[in-house]
Length: 111
Image (cartoon, rainbow, N blue to C red; front, side, top):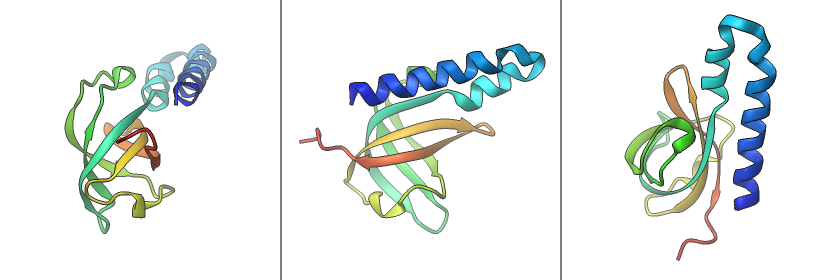
């Protein structure tokens, strides 16, 4: 889990640094590239709308504390993982001002 988090942070930082030389759109690129990998519990899911209500750990990379809030679920993510009560590790990014789950897997460390 720590390796996955470190790799995600490294990739986000490297990509944002790479795009930094492009001037004006560097801040927009940095916003879309920032990611957090956190433990989250599924509260509700709307499969048709591809949204979920998650209780998640703090996401400092995205400037968020631990809380319960809604997220969009990317089309590439297996929506079947999002069952009420499920403990997941999710990768979240900000896309067009919306928080989006871009990867998810069962959190094996959850009791």
